[in-house]
Image 1 (cartoon, rainbow, N blue to C red):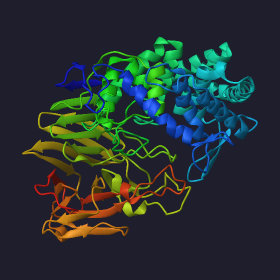
Image 2 (image 1 turned 90 degrees about the horizontal axis):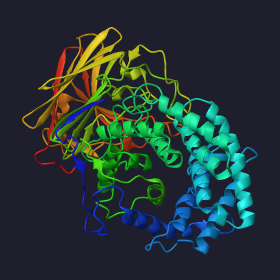
Image 3 (image 1 turned 30 degrees about the horizontal axis):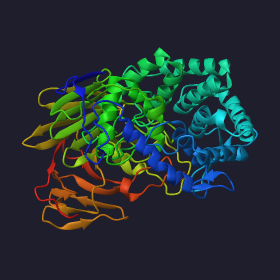
Image 4 (image 1 turned 60 degrees about the horizontal axis):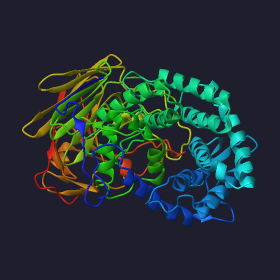
Length: 583
């Protein structure tokens, strides 16, 4: 991965806001802030505890409600003048009963029913996030537990990790990697060297699967959000094992994550094969604290997410950092530079900065994959503006061709049937909606990408002129090609060139360019559209986390559609509206 930006390799420093006041954030980690975040959460955890069952949280109860055992154990174990829960008998008693509740609910294999708060069930599972927190809690409080409780904890943990051990003989994925971290700690706690050896061998295998750019792929190309699961697992594992192989992987991954940030701290979604764009700021995890690149990421992201420390991070996050985190200076990410270019791999993707605009082109090309979790690599362009945030692109989905940068054939042939829980994700249709090949090039003027769909060649280009971003789409006339620019849901309506307010509701609507005057304003973004184009609403997401694939209207896109039936070129101009409407 090559990174070129005017920020260079300067050390990253940040002063906390007056609201945080405990300490300057000149290096990671800000201990007083983390202690406050941990301590402030404890009363809520205690209030959510049900002493008759040992369970935490609200109905329906799910095993992950017991994940609070770890931050509670950290509050019990960490000695600090600002921590009133250190060695609290009340807290220890609640922790003990909370672990017993997990034993009460597990089956004869140590599994719990994977139930979600919407009461949907996904079968029995050794829930990795719960097991890793339970064993970490045991590592902290095990010797202090009442004898009867300690025996029950040991019974459940040994049963569960005995089953988890088998996952170390399988393939690399984010869940077994997290399991490996927990298994290593269980090996430490119960003096099971074979468990430690099996976990270390799996971690070496997991590191071997890491792309040199610093990410783990689940099919082809980066997974951004889920990549952090690997980083978290390796970071905690590194604390316990001091395995240098893990440290090398953590440094590569920290560089990757720091390179794919937008200036507001959100991450590029066009390159992601799992998740659509989320405006929220990922604050990293303990694995980032092990390297200067990762600590720079943490300083930037945590400051942005908490208003410089005025708001707390989660107690789980604070506990990890306090117990397992590294400390030291950080190297600044490139996202705040006025100009810059990040190239991933051998030009498979680029993220280019020309303040106030920034764009990402994804050249990861592959056929749709028959899994609800691996999204179609269809949206190849993301566009960001400093004042407006991410305005276009926003990631990938399935059975939704209007999110595709280009299609060849009739897009109406591919759509999701509402309520269908098992759609065909790789239907044989007279339609191409993912590219077979893509090549990206940069010059002083901008970025271009040549894309092939079957035997049809297309091109998209981006450049900045007079404060506006121009996107140029080119394809052969009469080859059944249509280009699409999906705009993020920014408002409940858009405004036409003649200032007519056009509402966006649940109904499917298409507006020809002549109908809105060839220019429209949408949530402060003004877009000029050539004749022949149209607007389509709503292009909905297929949500893989819902069995029926349903999604909220907030995830739908307003799409600029550009058919190449009578022309070979379209140029769209994007700029902030001079007087943003109320739409």
